[in-house]
Length: 116
Image (tube, rainbow, N blue to C red):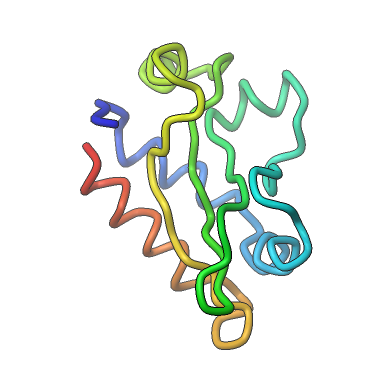
């Protein structure tokens, strides 16, 4: 879904994500399950985005970035109002080779840029 959300806003969110915990949680979560942040109105508004678990692909797990409907940021909220399940970015978490999630964070940023 094309969007006009700033990369700066995304980077601010990604700095708060404990990717090592998200990667670990992705291994046991079901598809569609929210991995970060926990689902509360305050968290949704403050963080603007969420990361859900996608499908398993060859032992790796998709991390799906989506916008929150009650985001504080106007552009993020508008994107969510159009489609709160639209994928803003996808990345593959590889728990065996990158348990800290450094590569998936870079993948999310790159995919976010491609989808603008």
